[in-house]
Length: 422
Ligand code: EPZ
Image (cartoon, rainbow, N blue to C red):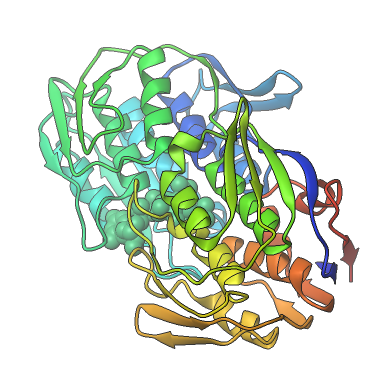
């Protein structure tokens, strides 16, 4: 089991490259299942979650090869459309094979994803969507079984909103299934995240006919078949946002490359409000903060609102604010596993229902802390770089799920992080 030892405080400065988006790569790799033949996905990040999906794709019958030209998926033969529990339970995003396999094979079994540290991960809206396309759905020993009608899926109008707004992977699943359905499908209350748009653009490049990309109303005209694709993934806006906070929390200055600020307006709005300088550059942005960290209120919402995946990172930053901030989580109400760990570092955070009251403190004090989920672990690394002393973060496998060699990359811009195997 790996741990991080993080010496603080440090001041980061220099230039850092953002990897391809994990949350684009996962559904786009699943989309390769829609087309018999060999697809290539470039700029796919090398992460534990991506490797989990690679294993899953191979278990379905696909062949997967990663080399310097990208991730190659040959989906010519899919002879086992079953999403195995042992793989799905480790990575809930595996549910994104449901739509493509249903459309390609007519029948699919996927283990129910189960919950995780950030809360329940229901898939009821996914199932509502594919059922509307004509699929028969039933549960069997913890597996979802979905069967298309003999004549194939049929396009229709579907509302995909839920109690927390739209669903990212639910939109992905229904959109992928609809590409090969007969007739036209309209998805109302579709998720508008850039990663959903990236998937839609990839599907259109494969021969799909999707309009309304980036809007809450997607129109998909079914086609007979899709072709394999060579496609490059967008940059990871959540990794970019994590690096922006790294510059701010250490009172440093970072050039952050391969990210699109147009996808991050809610994030840069809060950063500037907090007192950071955010300048657009040719390949991304430059972020610096050398004055006080002003308090700010943040509420997470579906895109284009403030992303839930940056909530923990901004809490670490605001823990050092000059005053009180309120952070409200509207997507995953239980996504506060980082609160107790940050309080171990002398933060002053108090949970009040779906919100956390952040009473800013002058400094954080290093402590042994425990990672619990991907973004909470990122918040602990950020806090450790600003804290006085040496912070140890346990269970860093959580962070390896979503950030490639984060310690090596942060060390190139001034961090002092050691990975140790204990
Ligand atoms: C995607 O998860 C991301 N993962 C998550 O990022 C991200 O936090 C989330 O979207 C919200 O932006 C990937 O893209 C691989 P949702 P997803 O369906 O699609 C509820 C990370 O750190 N809901 O948009 O699974 C759900 O419980 C990960 O990179 C239902 O009620 O999230 C949540 O409260 C974590 N029924 C809300 O909707 C459903 O059928 C949004 O979930 C589906 C979802």
